[in-house]
Length: 304
Length: 300
Image (cartoon, rainbow over the protein chains, first blue to last red):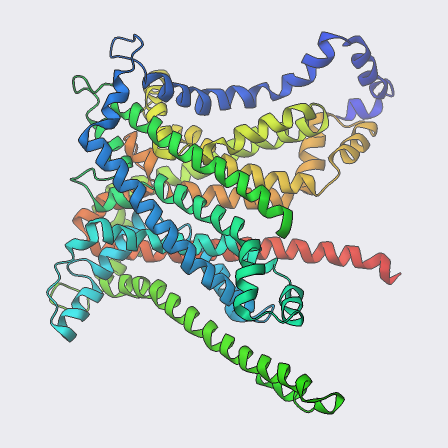
């Protein structure tokens, strides 16, 4: 560095280089420093994606086929997709409704209120509190030896063995635990964008609270609400760890089916089952996220 | 809330009765809103508190219902942990190594490229943004399916060690790190700073390390925190590629000692809260300094 500092010609050099690199060089040379990044992304993001997509259309010996897709429509895979979609949709709606109400309750609190700060901080931790830890938390709460199970047994004499926790409704409850905070996080900015003037204007013109929600706030918040719901859907649909830690024997959800297919990939005729299932997931998530992107552009128009 | 009603109450002699009604109505509405707020926050708060308290209870309760604190004693006894709970200990070591590797790799790959693209090849920015946000639409479980053959190849060239998971983790953290760093770079004038440094004779290395990095420090720190949180909590990729990290270790332990696993979950949650507090401290500390600097010319 010190050489460069002392040598007055060093300053003049870059322009000369640029002049020499006119034409093709001018366009190619500046790209060179970005090559490592694109190589890396290519190897660890694009190649895996291509492997999944191409693998879904290949037989065990490598020739092209469409018959793999047929395994998406067999009883087991179809049921798993049904369960996954139902679970994601249900928890997305629960999370969206409860989260939106909570977000609204927070915004109506005074600007810098203590409660609001605490809840906002708690939400950002809890939205990340997925994974196997969450499974432990609910086993400790509602499992066969869980705190709430024991309390219910001693207070009301209920005889739950806690097995429902491992089924659809148990998973729905557990997923809500990270869906609601996520909704608060993504929906809070939209609610904060609501101006008190809108309400005042409605009242000045003689509108009731109902009219305000039905005609003003509702339509304005709808794109943000729908977009957030879609994001929640994708979030639940891609979740794996919690379900994997809870459910070890049955592969009731698509991610669990993929686990099963990966473990037994040597099975005859199922060589590319994992890839087909993965492709199915990507297609669903991509559609949902595309809708989300479109909706969030619409949201920005009003509440940006 | 009620104070507002008291203030607006004694004003009615401005106009006829019709004008006095709205403030009182509003006060009622306000009070109703306060009640609504407390009901909602309490109900949802209970839903979130109960499992946390249950974890504390569960980790200290024997099957008979007696209190035992064995799990917590073990947790604060590294020698015993290393001896009796080897998978957990190995997993923790792997995860800590992965944290360092992933953070370094993420910064090295993203920061120079993002800066360079802003300066010299802006037409590539859309492409880079698209690629960086792509992992949001590719769930980790899907990525694993495609990564499995690549990692089979990698383990032939390098080793089956868990630390190579850092390559996959950089991809997982890409969208979050990219957003944090992009916000940081957008807040400074990259072109002005680098041209000033270049015209004073510094090379690109100096520009990167001594000009750009210090100026986007906050963004880099928050990208690093996001990376740390992601790597410490990662389970999907490690478990399906048969590598041991902290989370797979905890799951193994849970089968043998559910109390200990639950105690670890409590600690992990507390650490996450701490991490978040530090992060918000770092970013608000930075913002305050900014606003102070902005305020100074106005005072002068």
